[in-house]
Length: 351
Image (cartoon, rainbow, N blue to C red):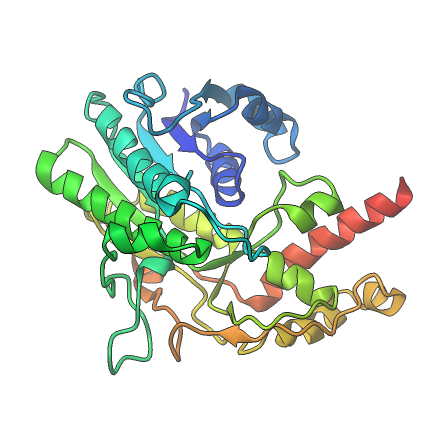
């Protein structure tokens, strides 16, 4: 008997790939939506997906924001994991010329395109949207930030004027989440929606197959990579972290759970002691990879000041209580990210 069919957008990205792999391991059939067919088709050859290649179908959608873009993609689907959304290159300080074109419009209109298509498909039970803890801000007098501590987006005129890609990204998540909630209030569809809010995601990126690509690909692991390679920057950088595997677990649990309610938000963030400085990564690397540190493969000694969003971080207790996700700490994150660095660097030296 075949499992339910899940549409996954953004399968070539860090979170999208991880969610896709977990769904396949749990017996779901998947349909992946990608802007380029060949990019998604190549995923089937990667180790985590190869055993499940027959359970993956691919649909090409060159423009996620076009009218009717997802009409074919959602046909006969039971669930949707909508993960695709523009992200900034954290390692770059380049300014952007048009925040609306680069971030706001793709994020908002992509969400609305998925919702509009889903209205026509009776089989769809739930859509999980990947939002971000960037939509949240601490409330006065609180030492933690909860899933509903959201001030809302700033006016589009202010976003249009910015050249800062990180501000534009943050506002794209706020505007797109607000757009979903407004759509649900207006249309009251037959399906429900759940928002997953990851913090700064750390974990190996299986779609990356060379060390050079790992260094240059936009992702949230760039700080840890630069830290262990001895890089220095003024920052400050986020230190509210979460393991990629736990983000995937949260997405799938949010899709499956009968305890969740329509419109709820679930934070995906490690709530233990996160580093106040990225230099706290170094002693963990020394313990996990002593030979690589000794040989100079991992020189360490980087300087990347941290910036916690609140004194005690984000409150993911309800995610653990309702969805059963126990968030793992910095050691697991270092093992995942630096482990891949070591593997790719050794592979490079052998060729």
